[in-house]
Amino acid sequence: MPAIARTNPIDQLPETRDVRPSAKFGIDMDLDDEVDELAQLSIPDVVIRRLPIYVRTLHSLLEKNEPSVSSEELARLIGVTAAQIRRDLSYFGKFGKQGKGYDVGYLSNTIERILKLDRTWDMVLCGMGKLGHAIANYRGFTRSSFVIAGLFDTDSDVVGEMVNDMPIQPMADLVKVMRENHISVGIIATPRKNAQETADLMVEGGVQAILNYAPVILRVPDHVTVREIDPVSALQSMSYYINE
Amino acid sequence: MPAIARTNPIDQLPETRDVRPSAKFGIDMDLDDEVDELAQLSIPDVVIRRLPIYVRTLHSLLEKNEPSVSSEELARLIGVTAAQIRRDLSYFGKFGKQGKGYDVGYLSNTIERILKLDRTWDMVLCGMGKLGHAIANYRGFTRSSFVIAGLFDTDSDVVGEMVNDMPIQPMADLVKVMRENHISVGIIATPRKNAQETADLMVEGGVQAILNYAPVILRVPDHVTVREIDPVSALQSMSYYINE
DNA sequence: CCTTCATTGTGACGTGTTTCACAAGCGAGT
DNA sequence: ACTCGCTTGTGAAACACGTCACAATGAAGG
Ligand SMILES: NC(=O)c1ccc[n+]([C@@H]2O[C@H](COP(=O)([O-])OP(=O)(O)OC[C@H]3O[C@@H](n4cnc5c(N)ncnc54)[C@H](O)[C@@H]3O)[C@@H](O)[C@H]2O)c1
Ligand SMILES: NC(=O)c1ccc[n+]([C@@H]2O[C@H](COP(=O)([O-])OP(=O)(O)OC[C@H]3O[C@@H](n4cnc5c(N)ncnc54)[C@H](O)[C@@H]3O)[C@@H](O)[C@H]2O)c1
Image (cartoon, rainbow over all chains, first blue to last red; front, side):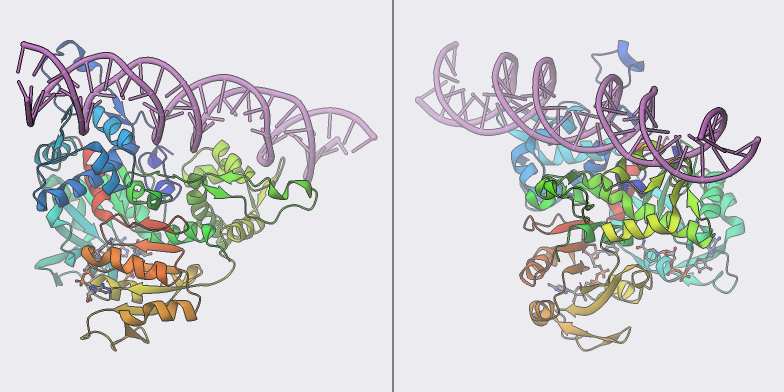
């Protein structure tokens, strides 16, 4: 059950499980408070999950050369309340100016720093079937701090094949490659039945975040975050609301 | 902002927006309570989103020929607490037996009825680029009450192409096709910039549930449920928790 | 420098969700 | 028929999260 923490399974679906003390206050502390270094605040995972949307929306404002934005306007764009945005941001500090709002570029950079998006994360991708190929060729990740750095499969027929300029490697090498390259993010695109064993290997390799496309709940240690991508569950929960 | 209700945007990410009075108690009432037909209970969307996982897990128990299961064991399999499962189910009625647990087949059927999965839902899929092709060929949907019944794109170069035995149709026909065939579920796989206009057309066609793969928050009327599939946001929120 | 205006950041409050804990009920065994 | 052990269903309590509402404050303009 610790595995469920911060996980989309019951989450993408269910939704909001967060067994552990949530998150620790991780941004650089303001200088004024030297005493409280250990008094870390626990930030709700709900809040963390909203931050990427804030970033995305701020980026679209940047493209339009908007210099600043009020919580009111940002809220309208995103579809939440202004109070929620202000509250969310207040977990991390004070970034706005009264009467003015938030500087778009500054806020966007700040949230990216909070989320540790001001760097690149290498990822391994396991399971190079149809979905794995699609993911490996997807351009959307690179634009967002994440880079697929290794492709893996058990099937000797596909091992060696080049996909998007990278060779598919045997699963036997996964742990070694992850350790040698300090890779802490993994994507699982194997069949359902092999997902758990794949997750176990990733854990052995030092994974800290897993994006799981297989329709199973993964059992992982507490320090590993899992998010599920599960369109079928999404559809199945929506059908409840359809009339007639 | 009503558009956000029950939506994964801030939800898959953010996570748990639910502006409206949630859901109405929709399962057939037990015969004993004739008075309260109008006293409909509002069921939290969180609960609804967990139900597909319950169903999935029950199916895997069925495969193993387990005749019954306790909330304790089910909870262990799913990674939630037993109390949560019992509470969730109690929104809909009493399905277990003291000392025994739940009949796997019966509970699974019951939840499927609640979610309206005891029938087939036709879907339209808009945007037949790389992702659209992958979705159209994905076999996972059919196993789960959802069937892609129409493919649409604006690009005249791809219109007419056969994908998985279905022709890609022009977007101009979308509304007509949806209405004539009473299709109430849509999948959006268009570029980001065209997602809102596509959603608008689906609404015109009578859509009630949209699965949105484009990274934008859609604005839709209150009676439409939207769920986002957004792996990038999922990764971006997980990176917050990665140490070093 | 003072006034006005807009908008933040946050206590206090309210609602929603989860967990606790236990009386009630079923079934097996005697 | 009675007892025992197990497990449900659910009030009540705890906790988490979202919203209200307003004092505080920066900026702009006189
Ligand atoms: N979430 C989504 O959007 C989505 C979409 C499509 C598929 N899926 C899921 O993704 C998974 C893969 O789907 P697919 O259509 O690509 O299937 P597929 O059968 O085409 O590919 C599976 C691949 O995984 C490899 N594999 C098997 N065991 C492995 C292991 N232990 N380690 C590494 N690789 C292993 C196989 O050799 C194969 O290449 C399935 O679980 C499916 O349900 C999810
Ligand atoms: N969520 C995910 O897992 C995921 C994965 C990959 C891509 N995406 C997103 O899905 C979308 C499509 O990605 P892709 O790689 O297939 O892009 P693509 O460019 O290959 O395909 C887009 C298709 O949409 C069509 N289109 C454009 N405007 C349209 C309109 N108004 N109505 C109908 N069709 C229209 C285009 O003709 C094209 O065929 C993008 O928004 C991308 O960000 C999401």
